[in-house]
Image (cartoon, helix red, strand yellow):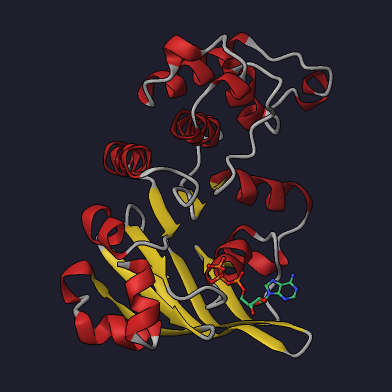
Length: 252
Ligand SMILES: Nc1ncnc2c1ncn2[C@@H]1O[C@H](COP(=O)(O)OP(=O)(O)OP(=O)(O)O)[C@@H](O)[C@H]1O
């Protein structure tokens, strides 16, 4: 499933958060989106999932403009483009298995799920996803008993049970210590490779970008100022993206 962004922009009042972004993403890519705070990284990811609508431009998927999707088609798109957030967004008082199964809320029969009734296949899918993230042994623990790294792996399992084609991860390791950050990036890389799921990941760290991603999109003031392989991400490219050595230092 390829994605093609053409002239995509988003304004908030007088702020042009994202400006004239054109790029193509092929199925199975592992991409880091980097740039200073406020560069437009979250806005870009949120537009792909349709949490935010573009002010201009097109986001095309297999010949369809995703800005025009409504109702069931929009729900299907959101299911296929799972999001992962910095703060994990688990329901703390629920157990790990139930948290993972909530990735299934939009699968039929939907009405039953409003009462918390999940099917055996939902449960199986959640257990398989937790096993893939090495979290199945914790299935019956409450989310609030887990470390941050473990919670993020449950959030990835919840994303996986949606059976997504794309995972959009908005600073997934920004709240984690270095060891847990490596663990979460490694988990994302594994599902990218083994399941051919596209991963687009906003990152604040250049070393993690280099270690785990293939392609880098550098944003500055809402514009794409770099789009290339991690191998091409040299000092000059980094200065273009971050604007100054001080800003670059924070991401080093
Ligand atoms: N809902 C909103 N209302 C008003 N302005 C917004 C909104 N969302 C984002 N912005 C502005 O758009 C710009 C881009 O924000 P965005 O959150 O996309 O950047 P970012 O690169 O993800 O930043 P960070 O790394 O700090 O998360 C910023 O100037 C921000 O203040």
